[in-house]
Length: 375
Image (cartoon, rainbow, N blue to C red; front, top):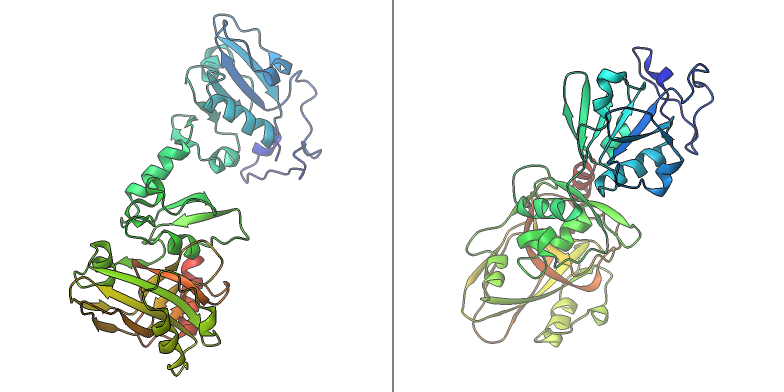
């Protein structure tokens, strides 16, 4: 996209541009202007040397002001570079204006330190896309740099269980145990970080994903005293689980750290595998609690591996006594239609629950998850 003042003369604001970032030839600069129709201005103190790239710009001969450089008709890349310089405080301030300001308006270029000013004739979509925060004043807007990545993550973590729609762009390889991003849903706390990533579209095929909080994914957080996740969190129960599809062979199960692998294989082999997906649980208790597992209770993959996240598809009540582990096979839904089916990978219970009743079909679950993802 190229910024040219002719684009702003009509009521319908359209911005023709060339895909390579060069100025469109449809709107040539006014030949009477020696510098161009739209101006990117950067200001700095007289004692501060300008960044190397700025030295090629035009130095404006303004009296009684800081040093101000101007660039005509900037491309998106040049605007982005200028914003980065302001964010790093390599320059003091900036402005993007559709004309060089007259003497009584020159303060727009340098008055707002570490910020950018635009006037009403400027297309600000690039600035908005980079996360800058707008303060609209009389006939101009002052833009502040976006919060730092760390601050954004900390804010997301602090509000992760809130009832506001929250998102943040993250790497799909981000550590699942990062409390600074996932808060109490980090994998080394209550768990749920892998499920949030997967349900937000993270997979090994993608570099980044727009991570959503449970509210944005229409998930509930289980807090019942007799919930499986609560007992696990408080060390009352130890749970091992694998996910399986109807075609999975018990020999494929990853049973490392299971207290009784043979019982798991026998339970699976002795099951009439009519359901499309299942969770095979092995639960060990320090006391003898009654455990409630509601429909929709989510079990997550231990990594972002492109394998489907599972949710219990029928209510389960377990009485787990002290001693040998209890092993059971539970019907499940898969929540990521485009991911690979489970084939014996270890999964972990989370405090998250999808809002489905036992009467919900797998087809309806996938349709609803597609609806949520499109929000």
